[in-house]
Image (tube, rainbow over all chains, first blue to last red; front, side, top):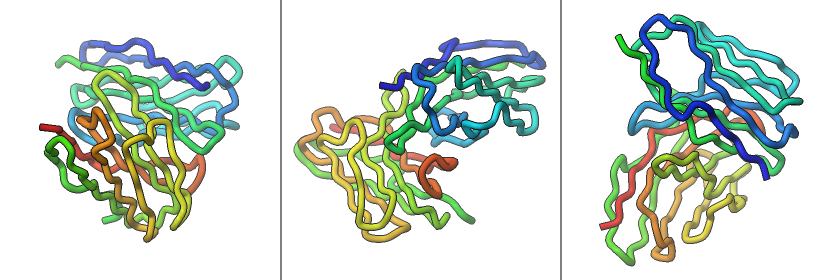
Length: 111
Length: 112
């Protein structure tokens, strides 16, 4: 059974700092991996989708990497801003046509 | 504006009542999904549908039912058999299997 773990559970950084969020999964047989952002009381916003054949994806200040063999993904946020404060969720597509989610990392960027 | 809408935003249910949560999408996506989110936990899949008139149980389907009569709509009924229904419910859609998944704004259900 696929399990997704996100470390750290919470992170607080000063504005302007570069930061890395970690995601690990137990079964490397994934179709792709998706990173989401969730603001309190809201739905999820898709940030990046990495296909299983890709190593990384970039969107603006965000860069996500994928290492299937080691079961790891990282989300790099450059020059963090207070507006980046949210919960970040990692999810992997697995056989059986479903997404398996991690519990998330709560990020707070202090101004 | 293309997207996913869910209604109502807040829903209150008395013990023993069935309630139906609405989910509509105008993205022309074939696949639709229902998730449940509890504090401190990741999202858990309730039901999903790959095509009209077909749906499959997810990891926590007991006490829930769905229908998929139209491509755009995937309503979720929370029945009285669901013992702990208080949660945040999220609907999502995608073009198909392992395509990027998009989410609605969610419905918060509270049992009184």
